[in-house]
Image (cartoon, rainbow, N blue to C red; front, side):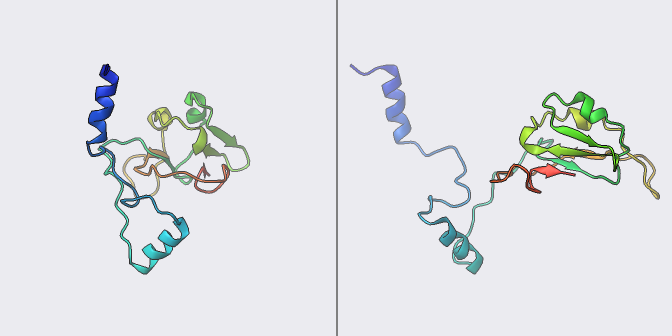
Length: 143
C-alpha cells in the first residue's frame, strides 16, 4: 500500500533538481583533472547563483577605517572577533561568524581625507564560497 511519502519520492525521481549544479554539470571523477581542464579552457565552470540585493556574505574589513572602538566585539553573538591591542584593530574569524551583520550596524567608521562623511570599516560582501582546509588561513581570518 503506497503511502503519501512514497508518492512524493516517486514524483521527485522524475523532476529536475532545483539547485544550481556548481561548479560543473556532473560530479568529476578526478578534481585535479577538472581544474587542469578549466585552466586549459576545455571545460567551462557554471557561475554560482547570483546573490540577491543586501546579501549577507563574508564580512569585509577595512583596517584603515577602523578606529578601535570595540563596538563590533561587544555586539557579536558568536564571539567571532578579537581585539589586537598593539595595532588597535580587530581580527575576525569567519568560521565562527553567524553572518548576522550586527557588527556592521554598530560600526561608526572613520572619515578619511577627501571624504564628506565617515565610512564604516565593516560591511557584508557578496562572497559566500569560503570553504577551506585550514581554519586559520587568510581566507577565514580577516585582519
